[in-house]
Length: 70
Image (cartoon, rainbow, N blue to C red):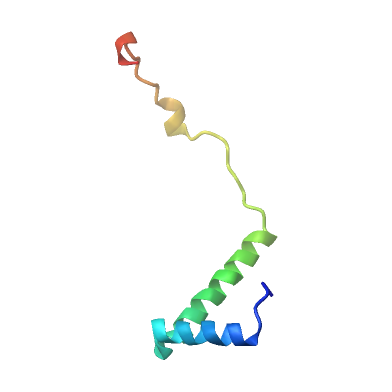
């Protein structure tokens, strides 16, 4: 796993506890877990992309530009 052994992981865990505090670790873990779950769900289901223009965009006409506006 990225060339990290047990000692390196323990050092990283101690640094995280010092930075965020032990009381915030469950909240951080929950957020990471939800993020991984959402990522996996997004990878399983391809997004539906709607490429049809909306009526508002079709009705709007671009304003004519004068040659001096570049």
